[in-house]
Amino acid sequence: MGYVTNGTPKNSLAKSLLLAMVLFSTASFGQVNAGIQPLSAYDSHTVDTINLQNLNIVLNVPVKEKSGLMPFSFGFSENSYLFKNGTAWALKAPTMQGTANGSLGVAPGISLQSGGGNLFGKCPDGVTSTVIFTNWSVVLADGSSHPLPSSDSVDYSFHSSGYSCINSTFTDVTTDGSGLTAVISVAGPGASVIQGTVYSPSGMAINGVMFTSAKLSPLAVTDSSGNTVSITSTAATSFTDSLGLTALTASYATTGNSFSWTDVNGGTQQVTTTNTNTTLFSSFGCSGVTEISGSQYLPTKVAYPNGTNLGLSYTAEGRIHVLTLPTGGTVTYSYSGGNNGIDCTYQIPPTLKRVTSDGTTTYTWAAVNNGSGNTTTVVDNGGNSTVYTFSARVLTQVQRYQGSISPSNLLTTDLYCYGGTQTCNFNPSSGPTRKRRLRLRRLGPDVLLRPVQQSNESSHFRQDGHLLQSRIQLGQQSLCVGIRGSLRL
Image (cartoon, rainbow, N blue to C red; front, side, top):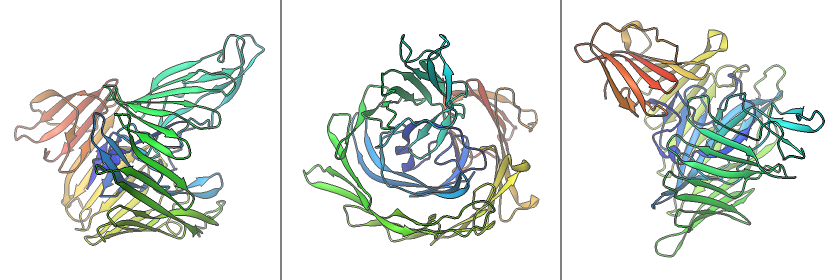
């Protein structure tokens, strides 16, 4: 059912990740962190993926693919959850603007924005003022935030010797195991231009320039062989493939968006979205938090060239309720527990249900360790239970049961430990040890662990071949996976 990842799902969501580099403070544990996070677990389906750490729903909707030296793909990667914006509830809803290409992709509206942590200081001359930008994060197309070290900063001033008087550039790696490298530098006059490039572990690079108006254009993503996909924003937004040809043109409006391209026969193909002005209201009754009210344009239909549609409807407060698939099937979500479907402290639905023609899957969320972690219990449509345990959003344990939760029904316990000095609380019996290099391990029939770079692994096996413990070295970090039960590869 679920899978563990360094941030890349196993379906079409992997084709639409990078949106932006964003300067803003890291969210607290109690707030939903959007998108696909590293070292976590997900339940992935055809068009929807559930983040098992926080029960955020991520939509993965493909639109177009084109082969080439650097294949072009375009799709929607969207989130659906509620969060506190100060003292009021706010909605993160799909927008269906779309993004193009790969682990790092291109999309309209990409920006570097300043959020919390900006400081005013003095240049070494003791006279000239400068603004210091801190608390940097890389934000991907699915909305996930990946922080850089808090010590990273650049400053902008009108110092006579240049536009930065303390630190004009830095290069660093995200701290959450996603393996992204960011290069940020101050490089312009007046408009306070900041240049930024982000590299994936595989060598993909996205380039852009930030202005204080928060617009980033032009924008391009380049693979390790030098092939490029780019975006140009004018009256419409054009996406250019690695051959320099227009692969897709996007137009955006309040009531809906359109995405068109020329097919191999010279005809025009188009995908359109319809946005409906939707009245929203909530009745959570959380002390000191203002309810949702008013209206918002929400996408209610995606129409494909072959005449099929993806339909979307929402709950009263704006969370996804029903997905009507192009095949005619439906996926229905419901939210319960806590205060009418929300935990007032952690901003997460205590119970989420996903209903299809195959049956009902129930996801139950609970805080543990005084709120520093949580468990999510998943009961599938066959009545089998899986308990995922997280510490500060990082997966630490998975227990699978045949049927209900009972010691006699326990099939396997998988332990995950991270950090160069951390050790697993699991002692394997004596047996042979082997080391090998790997990029991907499969833990069970559909549970994936993707190290963010090539790594060394030490595995302890019993004589009957059952894996007892595996330690994976990831540069300065190590990941220990202890498994009680057999390992199916």
